[in-house]
Every structure is written in structure tokens, then in C-alpha cells.
Image 1 (cartoon, rainbow, N blue to C red):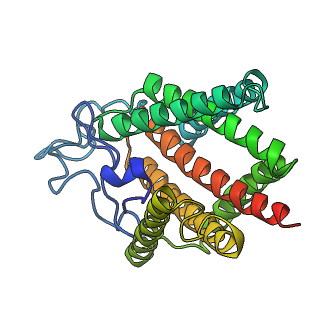
Image 2: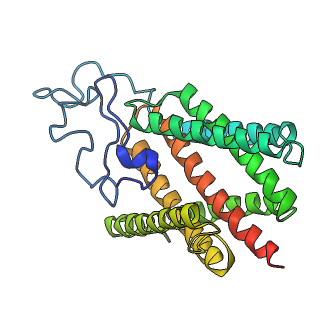
Image 3: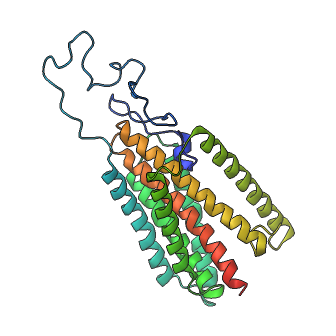
Length: 292
């Protein structure tokens, strides 16, 4: 099952060093009695016994130590999110959004957002995850988030940033708990529904952006007022669905023996999803407080 996350949607976990990692998992995980590595169980898995040799005969291959584990995913995700948070705090402090520095701060934020987008696209199309590239993306993304959060907190809704962070953490914890309890089951139907909803959501946002650019104001009104709240909540729900798809991807990658370096790809994808949820949460809360 491929995730709708921009990183995971292009490819699954890769093959590396002659052994197969995770590529595309069946909806329910590995089927009993099947080999997830290849049609021929001995063609790509160097750790399986050789054809024609009785099982257990001869010296046993050492257990693989280069496979991805949940600890690897947690560690890399912590490093990536930590970089986002650190640069966000530094940009908040060093790039104050006030009358004297407003233009400069917004210019840096827009530049950082463009660089972060380019880096994320480069990583998405690379065959292997590159830790330096992923951390660079996280740093520039943090600069953008820091300035935007400072602007919202200063001019629209003081204190909303803490609420948005707490809300994002609550969504993450809630989806993780529901996924572990199997209240959320990631199937092909679930995947298809999320992808269709995401495409429709992004299309509407793109149309709204075009109307706002050429017509002024908020375009069709999807980013403010009552419609803004509704579409913001839809965006948060979609982000929660992305998290479930990402959890499924990581779970199957670990089950299928993906290379350890792929934990950076998992961290990258999870970071993108959490940034999405935070921005939608920030928008909804700022609209609600701005209407008070």
C-alpha cells in the first residue's frame, strides 16, 4: 500500500545491496506462507537457504543487522522534527515580524519556503534518501514556519501557535493510538478514498489561489470565514489520513526488512505530514480566534 504522502507516493522502500526491501505492500500486510521479497524466494534474498540444500544444512548466514527498526524511525524522525523546531524558534527570535522588519522577514520566509519545496522535490525523486538533504529541508521549513507563526501570533491571534502545536500533537497521538488498536484499517479502498479526497482538496485550493491572485481578496473564500474553517477541518482530517497511510508504510517496511537508511525516508514523510497538519490547524484556530 502506497502512502499519499508526497515522499511515499512515488515509490516504496527500495532494494539495496542485493537484498529486497519493502516496495508495495498488500493491503493486509504479508500473506501467510508467502515470501515478500520476490516470486522466487531465493532469487533476491541472500539470507534464505540455497535451492537444493536441505534447510539448516551448512553454515548459517549471520542475522542481518542493517534492517530498519522502529527505533531507527523514531530517532530519525526526532532529528528531523527537532531541526524544524530549532530553526523555527531561531527565526521567530532573529526575524521579528514588526513594522521595521516586516518586509525583510516575509521575504526570507518566502525564500525559505521555495528552497524547502525544491529540496523536498529533489529528495522525492532521488533513488536513495539523503540525510543531509532531508535535514536541510527541515531547516528551511523551520524558517518558514517560524516567521509565519510569529506573524499570526503577532497580528491575528496571540497564543494560537501553542494551541496549534498541541493540536498537531493530539492528532498524531490519536491517529497512532487508533492505528495500533486497528480502529483504522488501511486498505486499498481507504487509500483510494484518501487520494481522491486529497486531489479534490488540492484542486479547490489551487482554484481559490488563482481567483485570489487575479481577483484580489480571498478568492472564493476557502481560506477565511466559515468556509475557511470547514476546509481547514477537512485539511486536518486529510492530514490524519495521511498519517495512517504513513504508519502502514513504515509498518510494512519494517516487516519486509527494508534497509536501515530508509528510516530517513520515513522520517521525511512523517515530517511533511505533520507540517501539513500544523499549518491547517494554525489556520483554523486563527480564524476562530479572529472572529471572536
